[in-house]
Length: 218
Image (cartoon, rainbow, N blue to C red; front, side, top):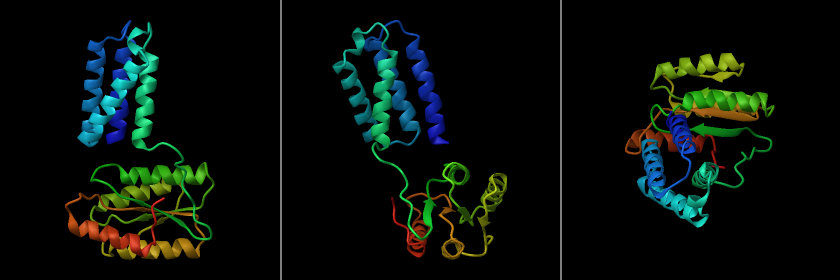
C-alpha cells in the first residue's frame, strides 16, 4: 500500500540521517532527494512534492539546523510537521450523523487497499468507539473482493451486506443504506471498486452511489 511503503522509506531515511554527526548541505540535499523520490512513488503530485521539499529546506535553514550538534530530531520534526500540513492538519474527527447512519464511502485507485481499510475502520469503530457498524460489499467487478471482505467481517465480528456480482453497486448501496437505517446502525462502510479518473463509467457509477446514500463528505 502506498502510505505503508512511504512510512517504511521515510523511516529508513531518518535512520540514515541519525547516523550523521552533523547535518551539512550535502547530506541534507541527499536526504531531501530521497524524500522527494519516496513521495513521488507514493503518487503525490510533483508540484506538491516540490513545494513540500522547498518548505522543509527553508525551515531547516531558518532554524539553523546545520549548526546543531545533533540535528536529526529537529529535521525529523520539521518533516513530520510538513507532512501533517500536507495531509491536512486541524480537526479531522468524523462527524457522525444524528438519528441516521453515517455513511463512509471508500473510493480510490485499484489495489490501493480499500477492502482492508474497510475492515480496519469497522474494527476501530466497533471496538474503540463503540459504534454499531455495517459493512457493504460494493465491488462486484472483483469477486475476490467480496470474499475478502466477508472473511474480514467474520474475523472482526461485524455484519456484512452483500448481494453477489449480479446486482449493481448502486442498488447494493441503496439497500445497504435502508438496512442500516431500519436496524439503527451508527455507521455504514461501503467498499467500492478500484477506479481511475479516466474511467467514465465507474466515475458515473460512483456519483450515482453518492446520490442514493445521500453521502456528504465530512
